[in-house]
Length: 144
Image (cartoon, rainbow, N blue to C red; front, side, top):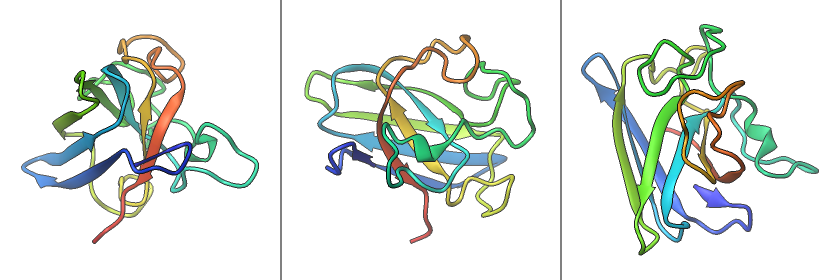
């Protein structure tokens, strides 16, 4: 993941795990506190003329749930919950999401952007970001 200056602030890894996908996000150099994390619909973080990682698009929602209720709820599949960042600027989120798969198709997250938001996700506010605010950092999931 990179911030708006292009500096690396973290990594995102995903792998199959039982009946879902385990997503592990590690960040450093981030403002302490809780930050919402979401898989977004597009395969880009920025594009010429865009700001705030607008190219990532809306939250990943292959089933068109159009609801926001957090990790493994009935809402859209892009909700990963919150990552807690300590006073040292470091944090880790390790979650298994039953609604995700690793395919590179319209229902899978491979090639999709993962966005770290400025504020905590309250898991309720609509339309899509749960009150998590601005996009602080972004990275695209790729196979290595």
